[in-house]
Image (cartoon, rainbow, N blue to C red; front, side, top):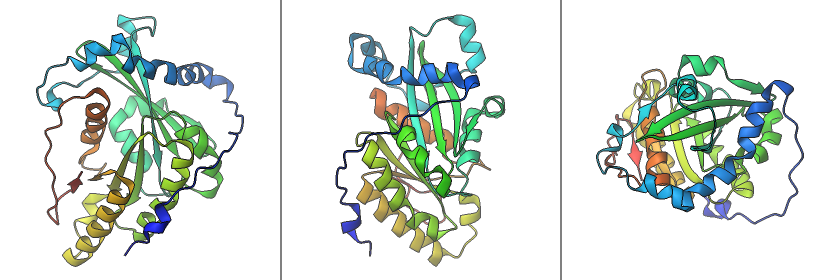
Length: 267
């Protein structure tokens, strides 16, 4: 049984460390600085057009557009809503593969790598509205811990990831959650188990144990739980559609799936 005392987080007033991005990332940095300003559009008059989107299944509403193609239609970012998403979890659990599957091969090649941090872009068009995700993938080893504050600050969603085949990575989600909440208490929390394609080969009793623990953690975190596989693209796009549904009040028609041996979705 999980010690619920662990989840009681005391607010600590800390002054974030100053940081400086490499020269070649200056354009990226400018965009990130404007994230909070642009997110505020969501509560302004301009956001009303997003809330008037069709009430069809969200999977029919999202049209993925390559970032370069978007630039053809507009040279300025006045109509762009930039959203920051952070990913936290141990090393070697499939975080980077997960993001690469979502953004695509071309965007993966443009990945901005820093010490303990990878940044990738993904731009969507929803009924003419341009939505730009900037995904901050924190490395996961001790040397990357210092990147947690800047990665989490102003994020609209934080993905806490673990390897379904490694119980230790699931246990360590507690650490990542507590560290993230020191810097961001409002981001949407999502708990994601990776490498489902390998996990499904394990005996059912082991699967049941991991599912039970993951659901307990998700409940304590007030997070939605997804099992995923980057190799077979299981629930990868669906997770980001869920984020869009939460942020823009779009309909969410996906049902819970608590069947052992199938990719779990619990909310």
